[in-house]
Amino acid sequence: MNISPAKVFFASFLVQNILLMRYIGLCPFFGVSTRISTSFGMGLAVIFVMLLATLITYPIYHFFLVPLNLEFLRTASFILVIASLVQFVEMFLKKSYRQLYNALGIYLPLITTNCAILGTTFLVIDYRFHLLNTIIFALGTGLGFMLVIILFAAIREKLDYAPISHSFKGYPIAFIAASLVSLAFLGFANLFGASL
Amino acid sequence: MRQILVLTFVCVVSALLLSYVYLFTIPKIKEHKEKFFTSALSEIFPNIGGYKEVVKDSCYQILSEDKTRIIGLVFRTGEKGYGGIIEMFVGIDTLEKVCGLKIASPAEGLKETPGLGLKIREDKFKSQFLGKIKEQIKLKKEGGEIEAITAATISSKAVCDGIRKGIEKYKKYLREK
Amino acid sequence: MRFKYFWNGIILENPVLILMIGLCPTLATSISARDALGMGIAASFVLIFSNIFVSAIRKIVPDNIRIPVFIIIISTFVTIVDYILQAYEPDMYKVLGVFVPLIVVNCIILGRAEAFAYRYGIFDSFLDGLGKSVGFTLVIFIMGTIREILAQGTFFGAKIMPDIYINNSLLFMIFPPGGFLLIGILKAIINKLFLNK
Image (cartoon, rainbow over all chains, first blue to last red; front, side, top):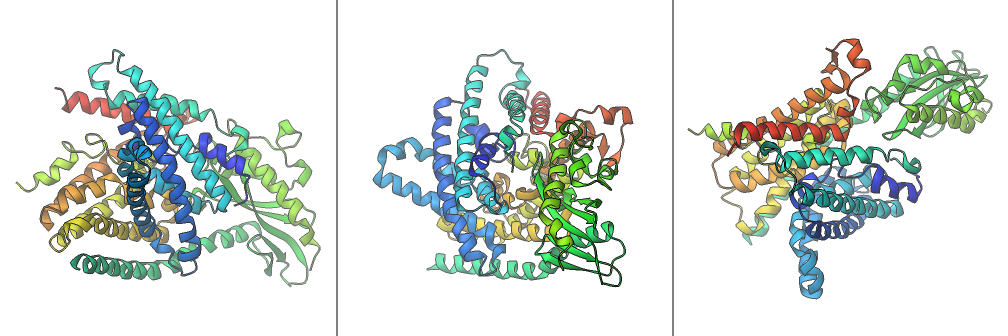
């Protein structure tokens, strides 16, 4: 699909935000977004793995699965590639970049089963992006994930001090807060004509 | 050693099972994809002698029943709506007037909002286009003659833009043999 | 006694409302009763079969490669569902879209394989899978029904509300904010009823 990279970026970053508009990657979102500091770490780890994962699965699909007529192995091969990629990144960081590992390490295993990563690798294929748009899309999606998770952690930190009725404590009020934030994100609809 | 054996075994069984399911379902899947075009064609031009593909997957010359002259064009066009690309087939006659419009259904990939943008598929909206030429196909507030759907201007505009661009792009094939 | 594995999944260990997993498909595909039911059945198929197969081969799979084996088994069934839907229910496939292949990372399925099917017998695993499936499908179906009625005034596409409501309906229920709001309210009701500590 031929569409300008700027539009792809805004669409993936805000207009069709992966968490609030597409509903992909919600489990870690509600699990981790209780503190700003952890959200920041998780966001960075997602951006990093998302870029790597799309950069690896894109050529696998287009230069290996499609020529061999093996499209039906897409789901199986992508999830295995991502799982081993995360393992590999973890080992590599542990050995060579100790500081980065300390910052991101604990989030990496969580990411293997994060549907945001796998979802993004499927979406770039379903949208028939070329390579540049694929990279931009992965970057925008990752940044969108980080933005929302940090925004949301800030809300939840304040919620801890709010007087909330017993039944609504914890998840229910978090969902309702998410509802309001996503209502705000609906306002980005068609921002700069960006939608996919 | 046992690990490798087990892993290989699981992989081989899985691949065999999948290739079987794939071979079994792929003809059906192909059939669904073609159905969109053939149903659009018969809806826009019910009685034709045949058609000729002039631009692959996009533009078709419609031939009269005795197959001697071109009586119109059917082309595929698409424009970004609210939820994604709105895909449609448009038929125009030799005077470049719209004579038929088929918009993809949600099953065929339309992602507009039910109750709002999805109303572009209703006859009340679609019938406005019949008999109009390119210059008339604009929303009223942009100086054209098309009444937009309330609260779904983006979707309505996308249909107009898609049709206008399509006519502009393919009208030369009305004359070409 | 063994049937407790089945009943547990419906209320006490309901995957969505108690364990809070599998949220993405629950919210994304519950925009109408029909789509919600479709997603529920697709995920149930994968969950039940992967539970049975994981349990069947649990004795020959060495511990250290169990996760990749689970993933292969699950993704096999996901791909089967994917192609069957494409071939026989193309309407529904287009609506469910990317969420069909994403069943593979649905935490419910890998979670049950690891926590239950790898430890218990085939029949127990089947019951467990069935219970969790019914629990999941029930929640997603209830949400789909409520959202469809509030947003479009229809149920399975058939009009059930008066025209005056349909013309002024709560359209926002079909958008993401409506989904979040509804699941928040449902979770609060469940907390009130079952988790009153």
